[in-house]
Image (cartoon, rainbow, N blue to C red; front, side, top):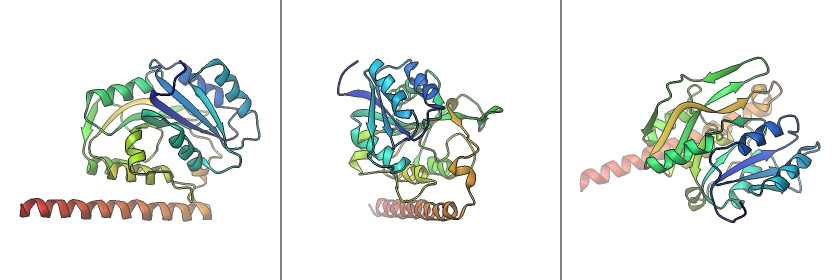
Length: 262
């Protein structure tokens, strides 16, 4: 498959991920839906991550590697992926995670069968000791409105939450609204992005079916939640999220008022 346009783009930021990378990439080799491009953005890894990526680009024409000239962080890598993408839909995946074979097919079907702007699936939390589903597994899907999805995004529980990696978006809406991931915070940048995206759209689909496998490393940034810099980032992120939600409420109130006047 050698072409410019794909139905789906998968964006994978990579930084020193050699220990986990092959498992993650293999899960996309095994996808039942094949009309996608995987864009790998290496953020100046110092291990063998680039060599591993190059092996896959030689074997699979829909795998593409982009190398940052300097380390810029996961948000900048995702933004590079958005800029390079040329597709209808886009999703983001971390390089130490993996997905089920029907991951992309699930999203394509959700978009084709429903009038929606974003789709979410459930996920498993994987550690070296066990595997546990986040939220309650009901294997049912539902279309919800903006307010309901915003509640689920900012919730600390459930199968939606604020992550970027268990969701699929319409690329044209991201580019039309000039959306990008915040590069000045290291935590909750994906929640900020999701709230901004949802604020510009209307209908959404979610299912608790756990198709994404989130590998929780002990030394990850999110586990060091109470470090000084992390506390600052969380505070900044929460401020932006709630500011956007309050703005949404004001805009909705204006719409309701104008509608009543008519």
